[in-house]
Image (cartoon, rainbow, N blue to C red; front, side, top):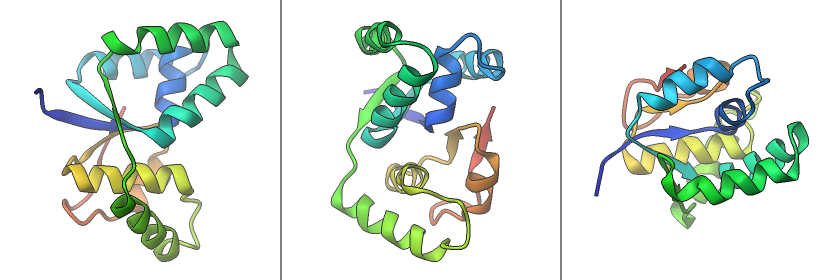
Length: 139
């Protein structure tokens, strides 16, 4: 089984799938350079919702049907992850880190992955993961 090289956040997915998004080209370039990309169930849900808002239902259906040939691997959010999410939300209560961001951080820690595909440099740059000095944030 190929090694997971990155964990993805919602904004990156939406930018990649919406060619009218100002970050589309950077996301497409970054995506093409990755191996297997973990996508938590929380990101899958939020990305489908945001994609529907910014494009249309047909685009969501198209994305879901193409998912099996994508670089993404859906990753469950475990109870251990939820406990870590609670810790992160508590520790960073004065920041704008939200539930989905914290779930991405927790999943990355559990998987031992230090590369995050996100447009949210601020929150992911603020967070200090347990398994590496800081996240490598792309694009």
